[in-house]
Length: 524
Image (cartoon, rainbow, N blue to C red; front, side, top):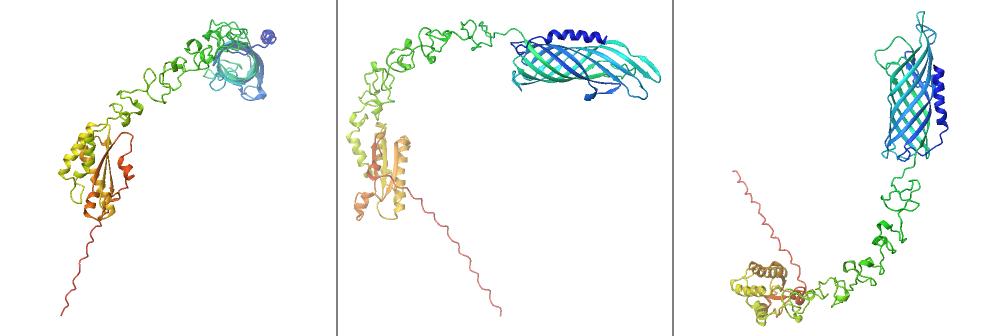
């Protein structure tokens, strides 16, 4: 029986040894054959030879493998070995021995770790795990001695085999791999050594298999994109279906502009990739077929026509070709003038109310109203040494409120001044508070806060001689000046920037006197 098994297995391996190397076992080459040799190590009632290389038994094997996915292969593997063992001298097995021929056939499911997770599919090192249930056939010969009795151990029997292994494949070349693998066979309830004394479990006799082998792959080269050019020759492997290609598998490009015909909107004219293969004579980024001015560089939003002043109106239609950048224009390219006063909005300080160009597009204030502003300073009075307005001031301030309401584009500057009597810093603070008091009154009448600015100048800007009481009375004044948007405050033009207002001095807390203790009366 032993010689029959060896002969059959050898005859099966001869044609495989002559098979020429093929492409790697991948999605393109899905079928592979492996030839291998294994070292087997027995463990049973006669002891354990696991990892004891001196007790190895050797045998050949073959497997047929099929690619299922980047992480999974299916295989059918077979192996043969003769496991031999004899007992040393001594009771109770003196002179016992066995020689068991074993044939394993297993359906192998290989989990490949070179699936793009830990290693690339074409990596040199390709680890894997193997789960391979199958069938084990045993043909045993030998004798069993116990207490002087000798039994013949000859028996042929089959078992269900549980086999698991781990291995590494080394990719030597395209289509050739060398692999090493270690696994354990557990033929359930097998009696490999013939010992009549059996354990209660089904794992009594088993063996390790250490394997070294060579794998070659073969099959028809795949054409993934179906363009009629094999993937190994295809320089454009992802060509869409139905697209005409050349000998290298790349899409045709009749006008040689680098844009394939199936994507080229102008396939008979050499053009630019950015314009889907269409030409652009003036290089303005607008294809000639869409360009209303194909020979003059222009803007895409104007169909390729120029706009020198960048106002959104083409030069051919622009009646105001030199409009400053950023200025809003009408359909003719001329600056907008919403109030129709002849002053364009971008120059008009009052674009929503008509006014002459001499007044920057704003309504001119009437002479009598200007006079009221100039004379208002005469009628503003405060309580002595305070910033509190006297009621006599209210009619004048109410008149100024009416003027501001009549001219909503104008702003008002209030500047307050003092004579030179008293402390300079005190006078500066008092003048600033008086200007603020007048502003607060006008704000209470509904004038927006941003339209009125107030400052105090103290005694720094006299307009009369402080040596006389009449001159000092003139210097104690509040002035009112109107100005247009964008213009400086007239007070700052006349007197310069307002000085910083110093903080008011902090009054010292009164010092408490310590009580005086009276001397105790002397005793007599």
